[in-house]
Image (cartoon, rainbow, N blue to C red; front, side, top):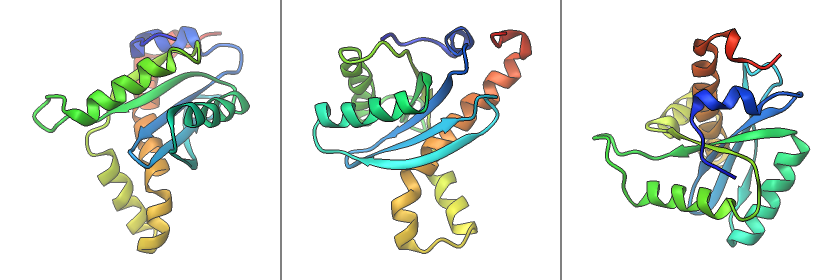
Length: 161
């Protein structure tokens, strides 16, 4: 496993692979997966965190089932641009995953993704209780959609044939 740039992603996504997005929390891991056309991010059920080895096993099984070729991990940058303890936890998670998978990871600035996800769920009239169960995967979908939009902006020539 390696940490790669967004520009390196298209080369890793040939052969019908999809792209996954993760929103890493202390208690849950929000997950979203792209379609094969790399146009839309689709939320998946959250993974309840227990300990790293169990979390990694559940996550890797899901990624394999979804035919994922690379993973986008939300990097919680502070509004001022600095990295705090949460960003360090995300970087540590990516390093720890290196020991259990060859999938490449992209770190993506996730500022305000949870806020945007919460607003969307409120607009969809989800109750507070229902939002609590969906917020992390919705945030992962926002993170992933940002990357998909950026990849589209890079141009169709960047996509594998």
